Image (cartoon, rainbow over all chains, first blue to last red; front, top):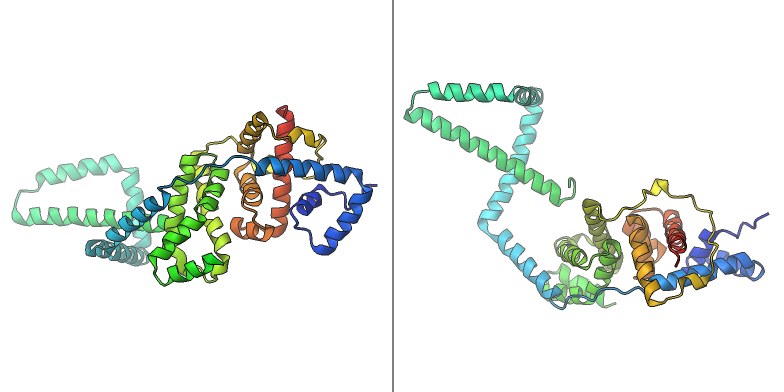
Length: 171
Length: 180
């Protein structure tokens, strides 16, 4: 019958000095009478020595300077008033998206499903209608407002993605 | 401990303290990142990323004396994520590995450190699953305790013990199969 102490996991933990004191003492006593465990310990010691002796790269002497440069660059960008404004827009767009979704979630999902399903049909319809709209100041302003809205929405989604990515909630 | 006072200064916004902290911990960080990625360039990129995270999130570190495992955790997670993204090495999924219990049958002479054997050990280390290699590297290269490894890898203490043992077992098995 194999002794309960004859467990290689314990040999490995003993080698690392990670057995509790009483267990370590009992294991040392066991080692005196168990050639198999002594052999395992020798092998693991040799393997451990081999891994510890593996060469590792030296740190690039410019590493600290490079890190400090990157840090200063990121601070300069994040301290700009424009960046702060854009960041707050990101938060605002997240809040606006949340509110819209709570209020009109099913409608929005239905709309997107139609857009995805009949994308080409919708696109041709939009082109057709836009050709029939007479040129004029009101129509021009409406068109520009719609375009600006689309860009803001696109930017908002970008900010949401960037924020979630930064917090490692998505990759 | 030097690091503790540097961290306290850094938490008060002293950028010079950050520079000193980088100087005193960069080799440790590089060893961990390189041990996992086995690519010096990737390891350095990860290390830069890790230090930026250290700077931005240092306020979240409640106990400065736990910096060692906190920093190890940042580097390890970034390196494991990079390894996963690049799918660099063909590693065996953890569930496909043999259960603990099979013994190492060859003698210590198999692991004697000659130059060519050292290269072979390094090559074989690369083929271990990322999670196994990470645990082994933290232990063997940076002398992390099982408790610290448990905190770094977010796994229970018992899992650390078996993971390190399995990493050693698998490494020795592969070395023997490879004629080392």
